[in-house]
Length: 156
Image (cartoon, rainbow, N blue to C red; front, side, top):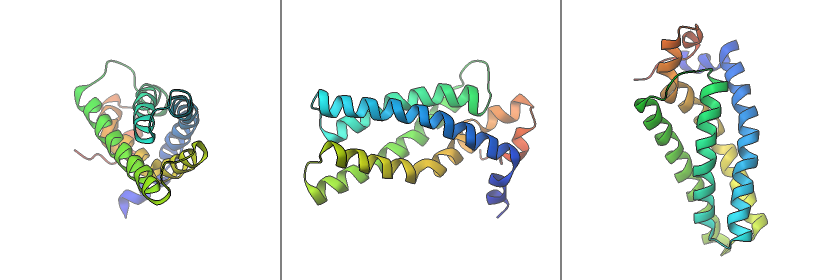
């Protein structure tokens, strides 16, 4: 219960809103690449989703580290590994939903693929924020000494 309350602080709300703003930019990158790979290059659904999400995740890492959680300085191995882990889970869920849609409807149209991707993006938004805040950037937030770590429980 205490953990859930940590999402209702001013700092957590600010972080979440910054993540949403960056997420909008990142969504444009992700969907632009997805549609380019799928419709223009003719790649399959899973490959298009995977490559687009990997590239968009790299953009998300840089922007969230700097702007959402306001961290400067060099990258850290633990942070980077945790970021990859959170995004691999997000990728697996996204690809599972795409695969289920393919199983249900056969090969997807561009519109169907985009709808499935929108659903997946919505489903992973809050868990991804929690993963970024607690597992990826949590230690760096605490070490930065800006006080925001008080609103972000540390999971080691």
